[in-house]
Amino acid sequence: MTASKEPLPTVERVTVDPVAIAAFSREWDFMVLASELLREVTSYVSVAACTLGPAPAWTRDQAAVGGNMVRLSKLLSAFLDQTVQKKMETSTILSRLAFETIVNVRYLIANFSPELVNSLVRYSLKHERRLHDTIQANIQERGGDVLHVEQRMLNSIDRAARIAAIALDSVDLKDRAPWGGKDLRQKAIAVGLEQPYLAVFGGMSHNVHGSWHDLYQFHLETDEAGAFTPKLDWGRPRPQPLFALGHLALSAVADFLMFIGGKPALDQLREQLRDLAARIGSVDDAHESYLSGKTWPAI
Image (cartoon, rainbow, N blue to C red; front, side):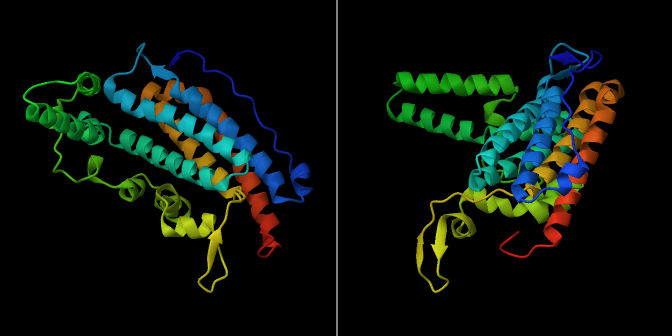
């Protein structure tokens, strides 16, 4: 954990050699390099997530943003794990969750206020409110008898509400609006991320929720005449989501450092972040050049 004025940890730099890249003969060569670059990005996310600012700890409102940075670090780590294991189905789910977390970080920072954080917290406590009400109704039906398991659950719910600094009875179960009054697409638009949402990450909600498109894409074989058989082989990950997540995560790092520590914190890493973004861009461009001479299914 570091205060914003203390030196931030050094992150090992991944070398990008244009000569070596020009000799790449398989897309997996790009995947290996893209994974190494995203691992460097993840290290910077972790550094940012451990930056506390001028105080020795975050406030609740700051923690709503900082906790999302910690979440992003873990999601990127899990995404890399599944990617290097060549498991596209699960890596796709994790990349969508990482994108959503990036949007949440940037939206919270851009519109930071106690009211917005309260909206986030109240929205997240809806399940606890429903569970609390159900337990209380069951106790009432029983004539006031409280089971041990119910007391433990009530204690856990009360603790969650207390730490969140929200009265549980202020959580309105009839309110169907998303937190902040905007859904993910609307939040993405608000922070300038509509294009990556539409081009890359919006469709991945199929994979998160297991829609028909996810089943058809990853889990079924078909002869296109209406016959289906199970498909147990894993899909092959592609480099494009790694490049996209790398750029987007770096933008979240820069936003968070400015948010939590101001210019002194961001200045410590500004050049390193720029350099890493440029290296990711150069490998992305080289990959596109590699693909330009190929046709399906070689791509």
